Amino acid sequence: MLKILCTQLAGVFQRISAQEEQQFEDAARLLAQAMISEGTIFIYGIGEMEAVVVEALHGAERFPNVKRFNMDDVTTVDRVLIISRFCTDEEAIRLAKQLREQNIWTIGMSSIVEAMETSLVDHVDVHIDLCLKQPLVPTEDGTRIGFPSAVAALFAYHSLVLMTKEIVSEYE
Image (cartoon, rainbow, N blue to C red; front, side, top):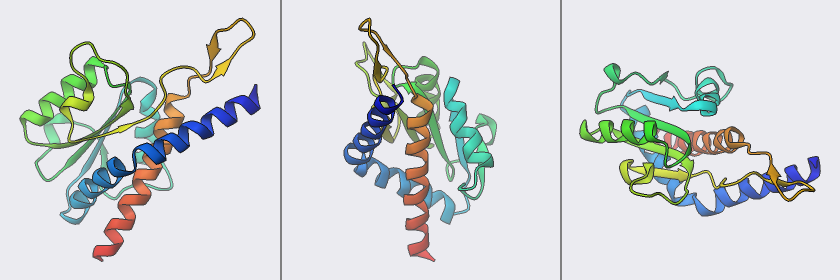
């Protein structure tokens, strides 16, 4: 099972990097603008996506001036990164709508699934698809297990950090 998980997870990483290259570039530009103009990068993770917030605040590779999201502190020079498991998360959508009303540039990260009405994709400036729609490992009874959504989000986060730092270094 471990080999299957490793192979499937590598496939998720490859899909994210291949399918979302333009979104990573757009998101990195937005974050670089905030860094260059001394804005703050606010991060908000829902559920298990709090792992990305912890990495952003305490990890070895973090943005300068990054903070846990607080609506009262956000200004138009800042950027907000919202991470949820799926694009249909009601809390993520509500927050993205609120930020859009205040003209705050927002990046969403979630797996895109079919939405009944609206999704996070509709309310953020840039959205990165985490490409994880179902558990990865098939079992003998036909079900599937292993849904590493936080791992996919951490991969996307680190990819975004690398691209953003590359853009900022070009301005220095």
